[in-house]
Length: 360
Image (cartoon, rainbow, N blue to C red; front, side, top):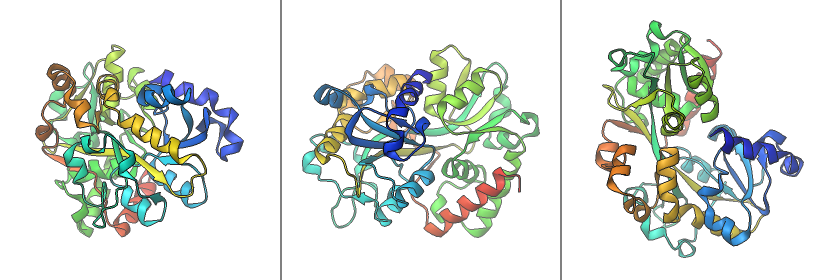
């Protein structure tokens, strides 16, 4: 993961002024297409068909979380393709940031996992318009060092607030992942129905967790380095963290069978309104990410599922099972799906999480 991230950062200086972002947040390649993405997704192995056709990757600009991306786009930042997750697509669309997709230009559209195509207001709306091409999906789950943490101490997500883990915990600097953890910890698996009392209880839990937090991670590289360096024993992390650390021989595992469960999300690519690049290349990029040839790489190297059912079905059963994708129904059991929450609740979460991180 370090090499994937570094490749994007090193080349960033060439387009920083053009994009209007920090040089450490841009990766220059094809100047006719800009993808606004999470750091690390510039990996050419995620879009090999695009590179084969055009000779290079698109230009990438990076964001730390979706709220940051949303605010940048609202204030005039220009890009052609974005990579939001399920809980943000409706917000981005309602703010006028998205263009509907022409699915006739997406040959693999019919091979998208059926459950994703059925997601209300995410993939398609009642008027038949489509908005997102699902690319990656997975969990945010309890991740721990097996050499320093006794599994008997982490049967519940409440372990994140246990004083025995003081200064040994890390959770993402993401309001969505934080409140997914808090919602599950208080016994809530549908956060769209969160009451005021439950919001207060969830926020109180996060304040207790804050007492143990060593760092709020912003990307997998930061968290992986902290866990590999024995600074962090217990993390609320994406599948990628354990997958990459295990490949490096670090004794880390995901515990998906806590009493309360885990969080599940799906992210994908959208067309951004106002993009100044080539729309033909934008569709080339969407199609390259949905190519079934990408499925095996994203599962084995990153630990995520891919949005293409045909590609996932071509992976051998043993590999799928070892990665946790052998039984999709079991995958989503006891999970909080990060679906869109009401706007007023999301704003409360954002404001409260900032207070919590500041120690208030």
